[in-house]
Amino acid sequence: MTMASRDRLIPTIYECDSNNRQNHTVVSDMDGTLLVGRSSFAYFALIAFDVGGILRLLLLLLAAPFVGLLYYFVSESAGIKVLIFATFAGVKVSSIKSAARAVLPKHYSDDLHPETWRVFSSCGRKCVLTANPRIMVEPFLNNYLDVDVVLGTEISSFKGVATGLVAAPGVLVGENKAVALRKAFGDQEMPHVGMGDRDTDIPFLKLCKEKYMVPARPGTRPVRAETLPKPVIFHDGRLVQKPTLSRALLITLWLPFGIILSILRVFFLSLLPISISQSVMILLGCSVTTKGVPKHFSGGKGVVFVCNHRTVIDAVVVSACLGRMTTTISYSVASFTEFISPIKTSKLTRNRATDARLIEQILDQGKFLVMCPEGTTCREPYLLRFSALFAELTDRIVPVAVSIKTGMFHGSTARGHKWLDPFFYYMNPIPAYDVTFLNMLPPDRTCKAGKSSFDVANNVQEMIANTLSYTCTTLTRKDKYRVLAGTDGLVDTKSASKVIA
Image (cartoon, rainbow, N blue to C red):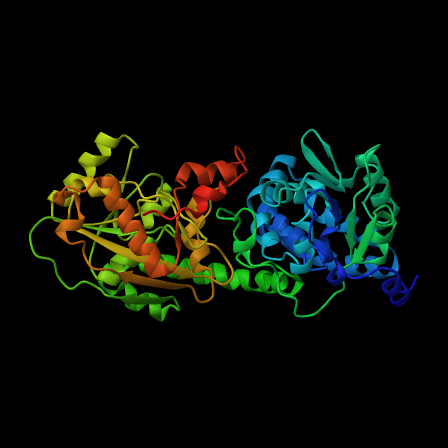
């Protein structure tokens, strides 16, 4: 069947009515149907870089031309098999699951097809059929799109390590998709709506009461993230953008230069006086924009600069903007990061009384203290709940709104090597920090005026959020690590979107 004759027989998704579908079952292909992008290379590349670094990504890049030839001259199944082997061979299954849970959802959620999603989200029961490994796609589909049934290619493993081979019945393309759908639904009624985007989807579409094709239309814009059932607030992995073939090649070519540049930036900034750090950052290609820098403070007691948390070097950048030495506190900083820090770092113990004494000692000495009461970094435009401890100990509080811009690499991680965080941030060609100092809280908005520490902390959180146009949440550091560590893969939508009054 030719493309033209197929399109005459099967209507497009634009002709599908999405009203009154609450009692209907929908089944959809993934690449090119549920997702705008028709190629799965970028998602394999994300896994490859996360589990094997640049060498694994390089292996995948070298395999890419061979994959393309197989797609066009042999079969889609053969191409997928090579992608799976290059990405998964010799990798622990637990590592693949971890990357699929923590890294891929962000990138999948940024590529949902608007018309497919219109129909897909309107149906009561949802099923996804895909040639991609089920282990890759299931965490996103189950946890963020409320998909009931996920049918994908199964990978084989030996003693917890992926062999890189495909398990029976093989790659889910063509008739294999139809067989898998019949087996999954058994004696149940077949799906009311089926959606695909290519000839190899026709066998499973024939099993559905209504069938639709999703034509490739250049310029199709993905669904806005805020319209999804659950926002992807927490995610991990080092790559900022989805690594298409050209981006993956660019990353591979840039990395040797980026490593050298990053080492130079980190050690120059760790050795030079903090008073000239901002100028040095700019000379080294690290943009730092500041607004509202305070000039002086009356009185002898120290001042707390309360920041939202984007990377491990937030406090260093704030100190550079102030042009003077400060102290920062943290729950968990890698020893190497602490060693190269140009400012003093004190470790908290999570014992409230002990930590309170430590902060009071710093302030009693008249020092500037930079702290991030979120307790952990957040990459998305959300603020986690602020710990109220700082509000109990001082009324000299300066909120600081911090935002960053990176093009290639994230300067934070929850699952990787934390000591590499500053290096990854400075590995970006032109990393940028925007730091806005707000006015010190007036006495009547502090605990000194009788306000509770929680009210003060929430007020500071809201001030910073309004400055950055971020959303306040009641989520905590524990919630983040639950999501990324896999103990709880769901994000509570209500708490995620709740704005603190």
